[in-house]
Image 1 (cartoon, rainbow, N blue to C red):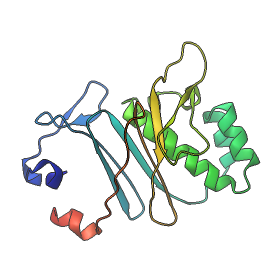
Image 2: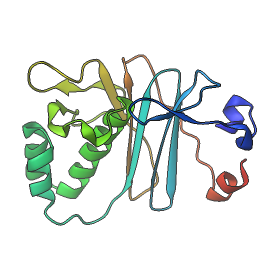
Image 3: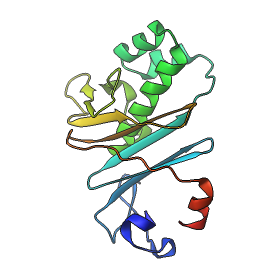
Image 4: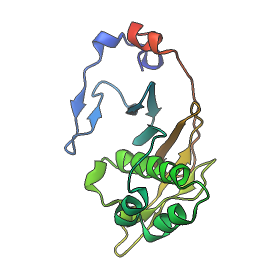
Amino acid sequence: MSRHLGVEPQAFRFDLRENGKPFLPQSDIHFNVSHSGEVVAIALAANEVGIDIEAKHHIPEMAAIAARFFSKNEAERVRAATDPTDEFFRIWTMKEAVVKAAGQGLGLPLDCFTVPSSAPAPRPVIPVGEPPIMTNWFVVQIEVPDGYYGAVAMRGSDWRVVARWLPARNLAAGK
């Protein structure tokens, strides 16, 4: 963020929106951060943005978790998948990116929308139920290191993801 905004890291001042989502009052840039295992992902955008990254790992009772929290369509996709863990994490990271972009966190029921089965480019999130809660949100899966899953979400479909991978030592040094 420092390099993109031309501001020294120690000069950043963060504030919180009403929903608790952090923002930079000195900038029009929106951001979101996620980390898992050894990877940190940061999304910068002109509009509200959400990002999630997850390391693949074993989740006990994965099908039961999907049935309880995912939309019926998504839970069925996990149940029927050749690799249920792979499908679970693809769905989970897309859903997490959407709720983070919306500023709702996990206070938003995860079953009130369905994410696409594949999103190599921005694809719409489908509201479930009436009245629809999640409208005009789009999500895309991002390229991440092997063993990880990742997604970015924003409103509208006229956007793209540009990924830059930095060694962790550069983050600590503020480069």
